[in-house]
Image 1 (cartoon, rainbow, N blue to C red):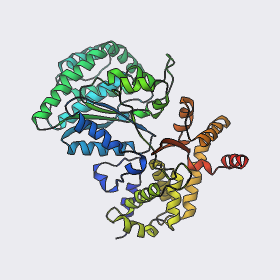
Image 2: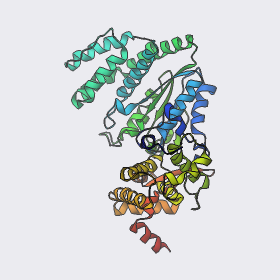
Image 3: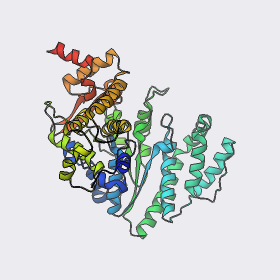
Image 4: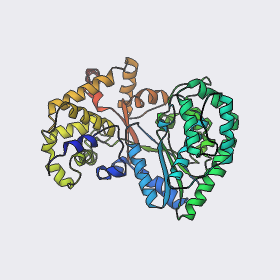
Length: 439
């Protein structure tokens, strides 16, 4: 069977997480990532607390495969009998300007929309009155049918205010004093009714998976708190009170802040966030991670030949790369960051059809490295050198600068978590000069 170029191009798109239709491309990295994270989230909901609401937190680098794993969780929970609402919050919310009521309304709207799709139509009376008051307060034309679907009403208000920061600010001024009432209505008039109807249909319950909230901007508010700290820590108890199973993605930086215990207790219900680390390409001691590299090679080759066995895929490397070494080089330089790996591969495919040559790969790597290093200053290089020495991150400053910028990656093994520099940066003159001085 030859290489289907059109399918291969589509499968290598770095911006598209794998969903149920792409299950033939899914690779389970759990055994090299240190723990069965998705299985843990699933067991908490389906086995340990199926009838009582749970709130779980999930985080990791942007682009490390969280969305793919959450879609996998959705499929597994649906197999367990749950009605699962998965959505990307960034489609509704302005990640640079988010408040608690925005998140609550977004969840209510998406849950309602999903329920309406299976002919469960719930119309909370509180929201019918609230929408009328909101339109009068904003004094802007929004065509709302108060007898219409809840998801439509929320969608229209969200769309109108998303395009206007002034309207959004005025809406929040109106909604903020009513947060408790909104939360009570979502729970009593929407979620509890929905769960009752779902159970009458034989479903196990309701799960909401709120993806992309980890992309909330890290800007500092007038209160000197960052937006993520305000949203997930200061207001975390309200996000935690929704009466259904819920999984939030949160910014990785919160796991390094001073209030991490408050985060765990207020929003996580006593459970720390589950962190999805990188796929290891090396071990702590610098030796190659044979298992990690093998799975990364498989991740690439299954996109080329999804209907072949893993053994046969490796036999067909020459149809995708000029040599096996070129594939190894791609996997190694990625540092186990899945989106970066696919991004470099996709960049190669933009330049030539397979088999991809080592020269084209090196050009793509150089382009990626130059883009990465363009924003690093001397102080940040010094922080990088310290991380390389310690294999650790010491505080929020280092996180904000290095982890968020993809300069440093987090890994897990049997000893716990450890950190390493992005492999692309190891090949810069700056890093090589530092290494020579060390010796």
